[in-house]
Image 1: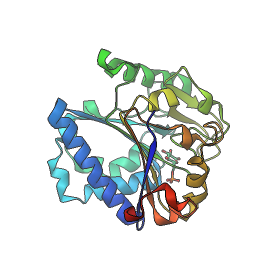
Image 2: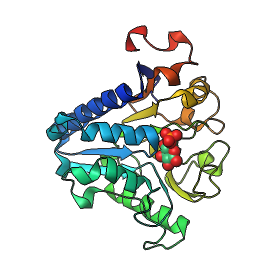
Image 3: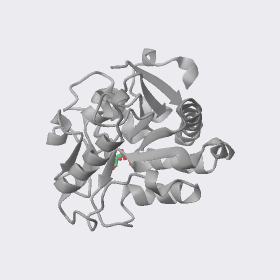
Length: 260
Ligand SMILES: O=C1O[C@H](COP(=O)(O)O)[C@@H](O)[C@H](O)[C@H]1O
């Protein structure tokens, strides 16, 4: 478990630009070292903001897009192409504009796909796909993702792990079906803590005033079932990327003054 590090940027826009630059560097470093990189995307406003910033960065051409595996931390269980699906939004923000290998874009199943409306079967299929991609060196049933990104919801949810929900208590399965999500749609698929914690680096993104209470609560070490964002950490690094508004309820000694 790595201790959280907090970086605060002036505003959401700068946060997205800086996180996109950081991600490009990470991908290029991993590809130089191992030939490929694996990244877990998040949905939500801050995650999509980062992807849009990456799309607009001239440095995006430094990435070898054909040797990048993309996974998702969660998905809204809706029909393929639905505007609310995290995949649809990621495609619009970035994915349609870069030369990815379609075989390496590991989308979570849609509700009109091979498993129909059976969200448990869809979650189990994604777990199988993750397990097949994990090597013995990963020491887990999922690959050791280079970076796993998570948007933090105003209620402290990450991926589709909501406070006090069964998915936030899951300690065996790597992927679960989520029923009765308090944020629409009610049916979702989510990675669980065991899968999230297999990542080398976990980056939590929170920008905007509506995230301030969640950030302060999660970083005050409550239980992970009460505040799921507090249970998300990477093997070697856990990074909280915030803007000033989201950091406004944090004690000032929690991050270097220079970072804001
Ligand atoms: O529904 C979701 O919400 C969270 C956070 O979204 P935000 O718009 O409040 O930033 C996101 O992390 C998750 O992937 C998504 O499915």
